[in-house]
Amino acid sequence: MSSRPDILFLDANVLYSACCRDLLIEASLVGLCHCRWSGLVLSEVKIALQRKRPDLRPPQLDRLFELLALACPEALTQLRPAVSLGSLPLIDPADGHVIQAAYAARAGIVITFNLRHFPRRHLSPLGLKAATPDQWLFSKTKADPVGMCALVERCRLRLARPPISKSDHLNALRRSGLTQLADFLASS
Image (cartoon, rainbow, N blue to C red; front, side):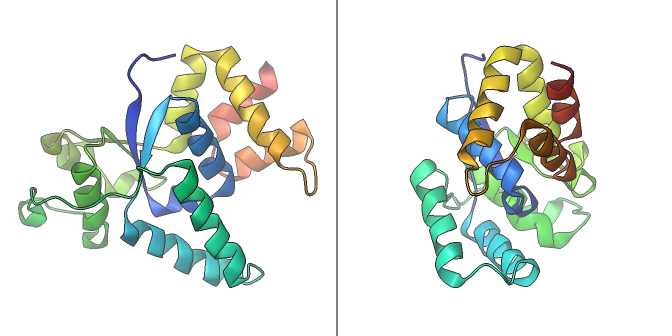
């Protein structure tokens, strides 16, 4: 495992996905990374969950955000005066807050499923790069297959109501966009 943990800024689409969120939080808990996010990102997650998961009651949503804060107490990023995004030609101006918060968090990597909105030419002047959760998790898996397999298994075993088989968990990882990781785990 890497001696210096990556500082990851998690985009809302990554925190929305339970599989991605759980694996990245677990990676943070074992010291592979430090997860960061902003209040705006959390608001986006909450709105998306309320829209797409009407079965989740407000107390359940509140509990999710409480657990995120407990697991990663340093994650909530406060903006620091610094970068003006006015000079950056953003593909989607609505993503400007993500870049600004990632910079403020001193993150090295923006973790997002939407790489198209975070091209290298826009991020590298700020010392940032972008990766999908699958790319980042798979890179850690290649570096330490045994450790990452154990990490994924811990996440799977926590899913106790109802329990989930390894095969069903691999399918859930694939549906969540973690295809490289799932394919590696299936072949192990």
